[in-house]
Image (tube, rainbow, N blue to C red; front, side):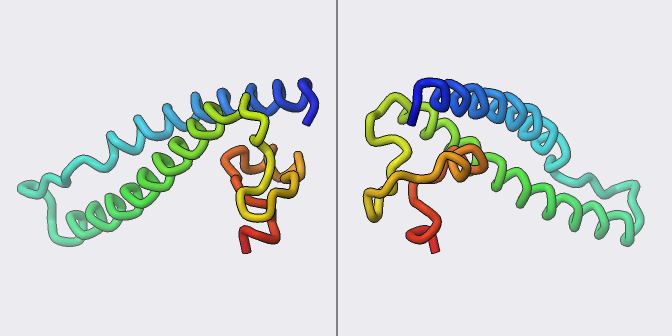
Length: 109
């Protein structure tokens, strides 16, 4: 991978981490416990369902954040961009789409 590609990838990771930080903050706000004293049963159930959906989205965002932070730490490692399973170089297009990828498409299946 060229220095220009590494720089582009690093910039993309940093930008994605910044975006995720905002998403996580917003999701934390909407996943607070549901109050219920002044809600009817339907409104309460709707709130609980929405909270569940948002909790799943929050978990996924935190998982992606951890993967991107790991990729950012590893980006200077000479082995970054190589599949941990087969050792082949991971295509740059895959890394652009999923910078946290540690395996090539074939091994990820």
